[in-house]
Image (tube, rainbow, N blue to C red; front, side, top):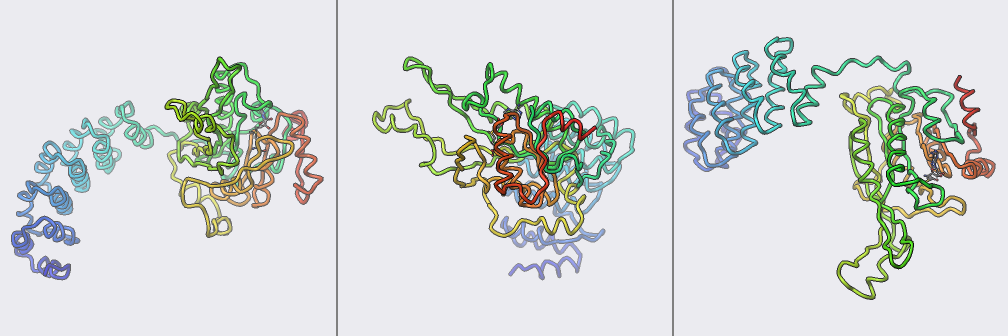
Length: 457
Ligand SMILES: C[S@@+](CC[C@H](N)C(=O)[O-])C[C@H]1O[C@@H](n2cnc3c(N)ncnc32)[C@H](O)[C@@H]1O
């Protein structure tokens, strides 16, 4: 029987034994098994059986053959691998051939990798770039790679940007984990854009917010949908500026319905999340996840009633039981690991998310109804977002503070908060809750925009 031990033994004896073994077991799974279990190969390994295997009908055998050739680091195989790239139909095998050439780290491989930079498959191009980056500082390599900054594929452009064009940012005057005292547990009664303009770059760790629902609620009246979207664009542009490197923005929105003006008109639906998404991407937010907040059907407005009666196609109007939490990260070439590494061991340990966390992107949470504010976040929703996307002692921001749920929850999770709320009555409502115990133990500051301006001067 073919076992790993047997393969190891045959390999250690040399003398082309592996080639014989491959001939003995002709079926594709056995051949793949042999190649897969070859492990490290000695310099004098006899690979003469490999070229024939590149014609094998099984793409898995061809893949393992290419991988094995890569291990040999023998420049004699360069031409053969080039043929694989030119003629192979299976994209995984082609990519592996490029990777094998790259792994040779041999200057003779450069010209083969240069040719691949024009390939149609962006992953093949990226693989070739990886192989060439080994020769960092080589003039030829730089001359061939740098023009790819204009490549049509975004993955290729990102790799090139990171390697050749990303300038070292002047470090923020503040360590990544810290935030300014004048922002800690502060609620400003003012327009969010005007307030944010007073803030320094890279001031907040996390933003979680639910913007006004265009004109669907009375607290938001915009002259047109276009004005509304442009307003949100300006808000999130500022949020982007004041967000620390590589940190998150979570936007809660959903398509809304503006009811019909009369029976001879139809109601109109506005796909807010889908319309603001392109703006966010353009201004430098990287899309990370779409989380669906799902509510019980009994808690939402009934739209299906008419259809239930008439059952006529086209008139189907399902009850909307979902809202989106769109998760974005401020674009950076730094990995998430970099962000995590900025924190000390104790903070990381204390911020670890406990068992029972949500494992899917569908969050079933009951909505919350409030006697004063018509659109408050459920505390559970805030809890999850804050725990999953921030560390203890971070500064959590909500530009559309409303009744202050983000603030209250952030505080209860040992985070600081900063909120802005334009409406005086909602601002007053948050203040009144303070005396009811909402922010009791915490030195929460309620400031007008003017007073806030004074505190940061
Ligand atoms: C959907 S509600 C947010 C509710 C909040 N998530 C809560 O849990 O209570 C949006 C809030 O944004 C406020 N708002 C609207 N335009 C604003 C602006 N330009 N600046 C600051 N706040 C604004 C509204 O008054 C409203 O309270």
